Length: 199
Image 1 (tube, rainbow, N blue to C red):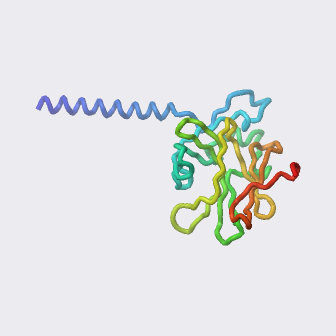
Image 2: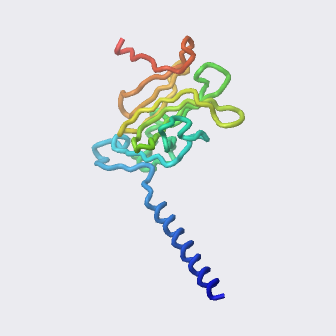
Image 3: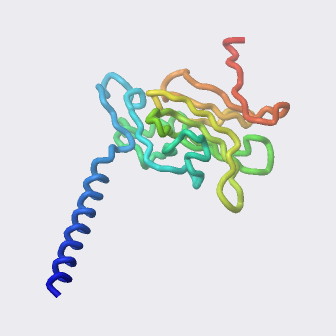
């Protein structure tokens, strides 16, 4: 009987220690967005460092998107501190007609797609920004139609609907650093459009 009580007490201590370690570890995880630098002179999206924490995007495992990825997190407004998004009390993204995800029939078919941006982390630890276009199917998980990934220390990205079902991808909010993605009927795939200034 004495051995049983000693065993039960030891088991309770081990369980309590495991719970404490789990809570301590969870508390040690970095926030999704960290910002270091002077926000009075440099925009938050330039200073922001994003820390992906999920292993899937819209039900698709990160490793199915790219085999080298261990984590991938879609940008969402609820993951970013309000004081950054609503600097000065105004939603700068909404004012610029930008979003982290946009819906449309970007390939001209009846199937609705969603284009979204986020941050990935490779199993090696390298991080970067990604753009996904997914078919939104009536049943099951979405189907990947396009993936673009860029290793970068500047992971911020936003999207905007462009002309003629195009998708405008921004690397900032107040600059001219953007690219246009469009369905190419001849190639039967999404492709980046050439910059008119370079032609």
